[in-house]
Amino acid sequence: MTNPIREYAWGSRTAFSDLFGWAPSVSPQAEIWMGSHPAAPSFLETGDKLSDVPFMVKVLAAEIPLSIQAHPSQQQAQTGFADEQTAGIAVDAPERTYRDPHHKPELALALTPFIALSGFDTPDAVVGRLTQVQRLIAEGDLAVAIEALSVDILREDYATAVRSALEDPSGLLSVAAEELSMRDTSSLEPALADTLKRTSTSFPGDSSIFVALMLHRVDLSPGEALYVAPGTLHAYLHGAAIEVQACSDNVVRGGLTSKYIDVGGLLKTINTAPETPRIVEPTPLGSGVLRYATEAKEFQLTQIDFPAVGAEYRTDGAGPMIALCTSGHLTTGEISLSAGESAYIADGVSEVLAGDDARLLITQPRSPETQHWASTGRGL
Image (tube, rainbow, N blue to C red; front, side, top):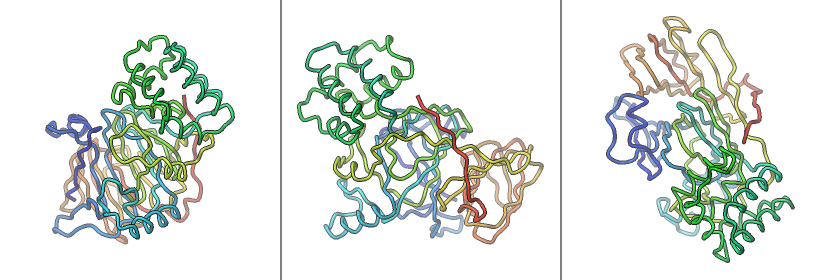
């Protein structure tokens, strides 16, 4: 398969080089797309465009934080897409939110140490962070503006706190954010200091950093995975990961970005109650085989390690499938895959893959028998 590489400001010039041995890029490369989304479809060796794949696979590389965002439910996506179509907003217009009528559950599997924010934290935890930051500011009006967010959070009125932080009618939170980008954060808790440094340095004066402080911080080690359901407010701060999702490009943004932000639309989309990050525990299917499954019917992700699985691995034919080599070298029939290369396996086709000291990731629709999935809560 030939896969498009998307270049965004938050991407990395070296991540794909480090992961796959490619030459470093002159411009920041953010995502490799594998799938059939019309915005950037993959192509087969025959020259045909890939079509009708219900999921997307991405390799994501975040050098700086990417936007605070949420993805819509199926109903929200259908309604939002229809409304924007009726309004005559071009699908590729900057002010367009709904690029297609589909929801977008997603799974992020860390390839490197990966830092994410996911879901609102408890009132006590959020107020604790805001209080530390308020003390760091130690200035009258600015400290009062931060304290007002704490009051809303203690009332569990997250919606008002988010709106206040994003719209910042007084302008004081933007000034506070600018100040924080210049302050010594060594007195703060390490995780908070790191989150604040990453967000305020990259986006000085952006009041949405206070929304970032309302979210759980999740630090993933390679091989650990996070599921983000529609409606969960989240952001990825740094690192490389495989992102598997339903075939959609719908993103409702809420900050840490120069792109279009619709505060009202975001508040209609997000779950404004505290929720625990959903860490996905893989299920061993045999030696060298792990499966990551979620409630999303569009996808499941299977990791196969050679030679632990043996000299060969046969796919189950329950496709369509996208097979991605992330390390080493693999062969299947006449196809040879090196790190960063992928192949499409049609529904009903069973392929035998052989590898030596290699890792393969196969994405396919969730198996009907996969009714349950394991998750553990973890956040800072």
